[in-house]
Length: 303
Image 1 (cartoon, rainbow, N blue to C red):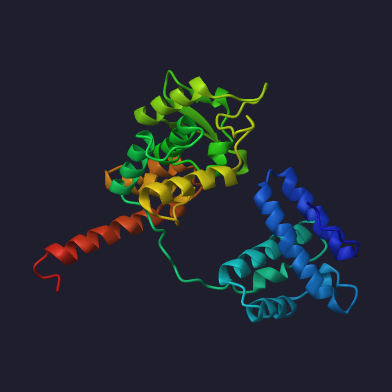
Image 2 (cartoon, rainbow, N blue to C red):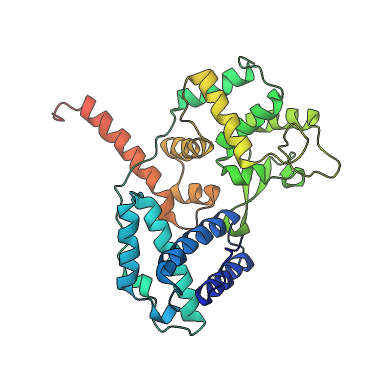
């Protein structure tokens, strides 16, 4: 939602947010940027009317960032807020309100590189096999099994999973049409096991009239991202004793296990829907660590 501002700076922020919506930015991005820019606006408005964009320089932005550090915000959060500012001032440059983006002159806070924790193949097989065996009684076991199999078997984001419609699935050819970030579409193959449990779910799926979603909740309407995440967490706690499992961990597992099995990195990039190969290359780092661990344990000259 657009922040309830009335100042000149606020109206420009509102116009920028409207531009993001028109260019198909995700609801999540618009919501976060609105919150970040409102916070920046409120900081500048402490002593009255905030300055227009032309009156905001890099020094003022650094002062605001210092206040965020003082409030113990994480570097990840501060990086996102600076990104929101850069986007807003890029808009101002495009509208000829300023000549230079002042936020582009501010250094981005560095954060330690942390590789994602990836479930092992044994963990994933254990989770899926026990879910299929019915060890954890649930009201909609067919749906839950299909949800888990599709997350791991297709490597889709949770937003892409809950956004799937019945018409997106080609059961004959074993493909699903996925709508990724900025509504970019791609086709992803569905492994045989995932396809079988998805068919089983569609056979018993009860949805409200006209509801196209593949995955529905107990009311027969589209399952939310939060609902899907809760399902993954509940099964992980009950069957693996792991409360940290989340849908994105299954996506990481999908890519990492494919890479370990010899899949081409660029093919994995296409399957994941990554715009840049550098995003996919983090999985290479994981496999290199595996190789180093093997070397340290096995090679006579490793120590």
